[in-house]
Amino acid sequence: MRRLLLVALIAGVTFSGISAARATSLYEPTIDASTNKTVLFIGDSNIMFGAAAITTALVNRPHGYLPVFTPRGGIGIRGYKQGFCPAATVAPCDAPDYWQTRLPEVLAVVHPDAIVVNLGINDAKAPGTDTSAGYSDYSEKMAWLLALLPADVPVFWSGLPTPIEPKSFQVGSSAIDRAITNQPGIHVLRWYVAAYQHPEYMIQPHVNEHYSVAGNNAYAAMVVAALDQQFGQ
Image (tube, helix red, strand yellow):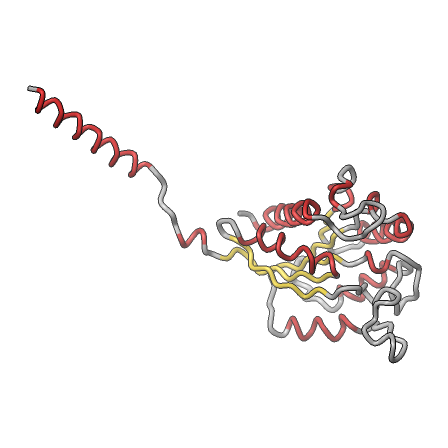
């Protein structure tokens, strides 16, 4: 009798284990490995330094995105910030046509479904001119850059986290945020709103214009949320 009872208990445990295993969802590689959309990131050093966090947020998920990066440290829309030009010791270098050269070459081999732009902080220090780094005529500078991009691809443009930027940048970054907010034909990523009460998003708030680890993660999460809203999960 005891032997029969023991066999019955073992059988019950075995069948219960099989039932539980069948109830558990199995790993599905076609979901985990499938690509949602290709996203091109145009930016400066904040995109360069934040690329790991952005990649993690876009890729480590079901139906992940495919990020492609083309940042350049120290650059704005129409030139390098003062003292950053690679040829500064040789000759004056505003580099007004950097993106005019760079983007057609990138777009010849990359066909993005969406474009994310994070430019502006290197334009925020001084007014500049319409063909140099600077925040003057910023709407026109944005329109110049947008004309280099495919008209049928949605563009997401990040505002600057003005309240926690270095104080010497805040007049310029406020002007740039206004231009971004009022620019037609783009999706505005309101980074200035997301970062408003988070000084920890900067390496040194009001001193250093680069994002911290927490800032890079928050920026990446904001981008993913905007892409998901546009394209769906």
